[in-house]
Length: 201
Image (cartoon, rainbow, N blue to C red; front, side, top):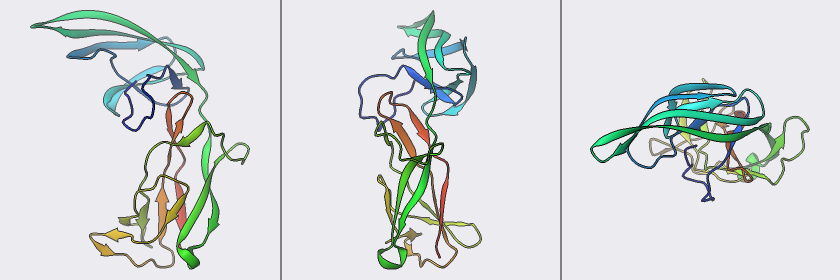
């Protein structure tokens, strides 16, 4: 799998999310061309994915064998090789964003928690916010008019929002929208939450 730039780990994951799109790439370092990719558990798709043009969606949990035929650079010519990599597909968490406290009228701070949508309880410490995120600002017509500062925690400050270098004055009905990428600290897999929308009252 392509290595995420924000990963705190130096090892390669051997897991995949079952039922989700997982970008995959060659483990060959150098000049290569992937000629064919197939699997015994799920489907392979092509498209514009993170650092690659291939992705796999495992159909069931358990072992996932990914096979490929590649041409790899060897000086002035290419050698054709066949590879097999085995992963383990696991069930993804169901994480949602829940509003914890709203002090907008006092100090313009919105606090939230990350919860399991099946139990409504806070998610395990195994899962952390995996990337910075940049909340969007939408006007009363649903138009994107700006962004808040980059965030990495469970509090969002509504101070200093900017759009084209002009300060935005929040109005009733304006919305703050964002999606958070969660990192599984056990497997280094990433998964997004559902979109969260907060309305200015």
